[in-house]
Each structure stands twice: as structure tokens, then as C-alpha cells.
Length: 115
Image (cartoon, rainbow, N blue to C red):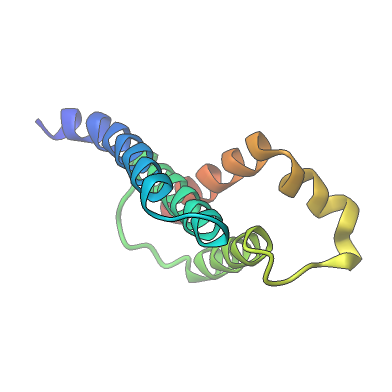
């Protein structure tokens, strides 16, 4: 039963993300809808990546978790247009303008958080 839960939980997160986006699009409008959708996508994909990790134990690598948290913070503030990083325009444009790469990176950060 535990193996089935490990396989179904990431799928349930994606279904919940889809439902959350559907509700958000029907309830909110305008700029607030964009902010809520971005936050839902980032949170849902990070949680999906965390559930893909098989090692859900407390490990001592707190430096890795701090670095991943800072990377996720930078992703959130750039997606919500709170801050712009002009010094690294060419590097960050690859992630910001290409959603497939950005979403894959968010899933990777969620997976690496517990590895």
C-alpha cells in the first residue's frame, strides 16, 4: 500500500493543481488572477518534485536546503514581477521566458530538497 501511495500522491498533486487553477480562473480576474496562478503553479510543481523524492528523511544537509530556498525565492519574486535582476539578464531570461525549462527546474528543486 505504501508503494501505491508513493505513485499516486504526485499524480494527486497535479490533479489538485489543475483544479486549483480552474477555480482560480473562475473566481479571480485581472492581475490578482495572474499572481495567484503563478503562486499555485510554483507551489504545486515544487510539491510534485518533493513527492517524487524517495528519501524523505531528515538529513543534515541544511546548506543545500538554504540554497534551494534562495533559488525558489528568486524564482517567485521574478515571476510575480516584484524584482528584476538586470545584471543577469541573459542567464535569467532563459529560465523566465521559457516556461518548460522554468517548470522543470522548479520540479528539480523540489526533488533535490530531500535528496
